[in-house]
Image (cartoon, helix red, strand yellow):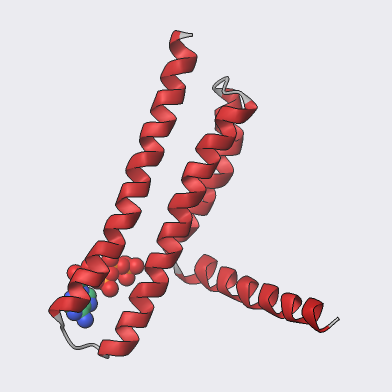
Length: 120
Ligand SMILES: Nc1ncnc2c1ncn2[C@@H]1O[C@H](COP(=O)(O)OP(=O)(O)OP(=O)(O)O)[C@@H](O)[C@H]1O
């Protein structure tokens, strides 16, 4: 029973995080919209269920990277309290780069599957 209550509490915190992201973080909001759109657009483009799932997963991984990037940014802002620090710059820029990699991979995945469907 205690375990279930702990799980419910964790779920509540996660939902509070989701509410913050939807309200305050434009990039995450946009990625959530793209996640939903993949489920509509991919089948319309003739993608199979598996292909749609792959594109959806790629975009979801990008959204997760953006959420982790946001958490890192907020933590660093708290630690350095507005002061410039070269290592904070490196940490923020490398975290952003992780998002960039995911965006690039998502676009490549989408284009490969699109090409497969066009030339099949
Ligand atoms: N305290 C700091 N010390 C050093 N460089 C910083 C610091 N704060 C921000 N930067 C640099 O400025 C860039 C922009 O930082 P910022 O925190 O505004 O992130 P962002 O990428 O604009 O994200 P968002 O728009 O979500 O806030 C960072 O990538 C980093 O290079």
